[in-house]
Amino acid sequence: MENPIDAPPSDHAEPSEVEPALEAALPGEPDETSDAPRRTGAGFAAAPALLVTQGKHRFYTLVLPSDLLAATCTVEARLDNPIDGFQRLLDKKRAREIADYIDSGFGSVPSAIILSAQPRAQLQFDRKSGELTFRKDPRSFLIIDGQHRVYGFNLAAKSVKVPVVVYNRLTRSQECQLFMDINTKQRPVPPELLLDIRRLSESETEAEALLHNVFDLFSNDEKSVLSGLLSPSERRKGKISRVTFNAALKSIDGAFVDASAEDVYQVLNAYLRACLNGLRYHGAEANIANPALFKALILLFANVAERVSDRYGGRYTTQNFEDILGPFFRKLKKSELPKPATGHLALYENYRKALSSGFSLKQWLFA
Image (cartoon, rainbow, N blue to C red; front, side):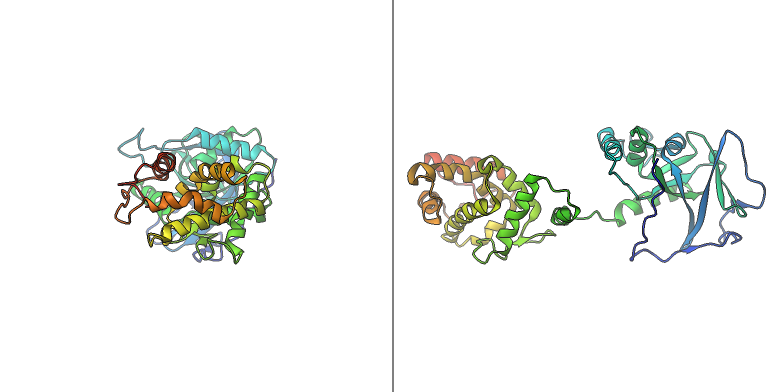
């Protein structure tokens, strides 16, 4: 059994106040606190709780075992209840991934589950003991945020203690507004940043480490053809993000089996320099940072490298790549621009055909 997790407060959190035990209800708000003896019996559960005020609202913070949480919570999916429901349908695969993460022994999910107490919960806060009491009923609480975590915790072989926030006496419109606020005002961490800091967590696989090192070489080496064109931790217009870079290189990972990051960098740098020179022929060198074009050119690498190997015995220099790519780029006309929605796979397929047969690239292009 894991110990409760005390999540550190955010430096940017809205100021809040933990109310004294005898604090009165806020103006116009019903009071479920009581000096009366708390309800007891097999049908009720109790847990230490803090009453917190944020702005005009208040809620309880507490820790509950995952099995009790699963036994007392429900959701109202929009598809199942088109009148009052507002939650998305449960993704069981995602819940299973959470369960496996917990059972791995290293899993920790400290973010709080947000609940709204329903009338059948008979919620009561004992001012003297500081305990929150509620009925052990399958519909005592409506899950506002965290349904996949609750279901995942329930699937896990291990029981865990879960941070919980409980609102009481919310109307359905208030519950819906809270759901919308949580899912629109909180922004997820950009995947570019997660990739950039993965090394700090010491959880990179060998393949991820290779991609990380190759990206860093392209970003930091003064001889890099992509110098100044990469953005490691965020998505920026006119830059190649780490996510785009990794996705592109994963498509040709079979070409670099057992190669070092330095070897991959040297060969791709020579190839991309030849590509950049080809784009420069049309005054379109800035297009190399376009995600669709960059991915298409990386996909084309294997086709071009095979010809360089056959003709020059595997000497992968910029000049040798240009000997193959020069005629390819010279066939293009600046007016032969692509369809705006053309994806990288469609671009690659047309580039591949053009490289093999001399097919005109009319209506296709560099996005």
